[in-house]
Amino acid sequence: MLDAARILERCEALARHSELPGGLTRVFLSPQARAASDAVLGWMREAGMHAQLDAIGNAAGRYEGDRPGLACLMLGSHLDTVRDAGRYDGMLGVISAIECVHLLHAKNRRLPFAIEVIGFGDEEGVRFGTTLLGSRAVAGIFDSKVLAAVDAGGQTMAQALSGFGLDPASIPAVARKKGDVLAYAELHIEQGPVLESEGLPVGVVTAINGFSRLRVALRGAAGHAGTVPMGLRRDALAGAAECVLATERIARGHAELVATVGRIEA
Image 1 (cartoon, rainbow, N blue to C red):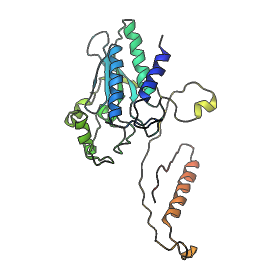
Image 2 (image 1 turned 90 degrees about the vertical axis):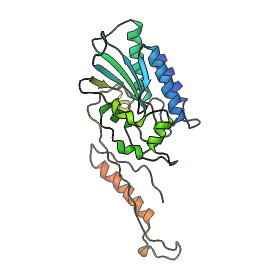
Image 3 (image 1 turned 45 degrees about the horizontal axis):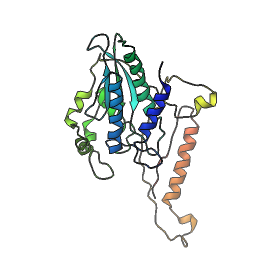
Image 4 (image 1 turned 45 degrees about the vertical axis):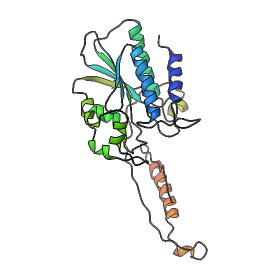
């Protein structure tokens, strides 16, 4: 049987690799990401997989089938986090997949296909504002233009990859060829309240929201707070507040639409 206690223990262990004391923040190509990847690669090897860090920073393990070189079932999720994240977001899918392979290995069982487990190095895009880098590389749709993206400290992604010991020029080799992957499956904690509200233990995803990100600048007119009459004011922050409420109102009017204003600066 799968060892549920070990899955939870390993999720707890990964959650300790955080730059946020008392919480969990682990961004792409950080020292904390290195520590988490090293732990995951070690667990993959214990489970009988050949494992290594690929050129985009994914922790990738492969458990061969009943003969070498077979197409694979790909399992996994991401290892990076948003700021102040939950300890099962992403990690649960990676650790559970490793545990499945561990069980096969313990029984000395090989399948008529290989299994690849991937802990994607970047999904959230917190550091460089570019999401899904690990899976884009695997899918062969990584855009090399994002290597010029700059983090808050002024470092480019290309520089960060090199500093992490990776070769940005090798990223195209991460892509899987057509026929290499039979299917992809990912176990993930639900990040909304639907299953809990309906008393259900598990759900199967049949669709996912696509998204667009917009950055908007509203410009008003400066004026003395005590002497400019209300009718003559052009307060940018007040206008932004109206936009936030309008965004929420529009989304509530459409059953399949969600919208969030996640950041505002005055």
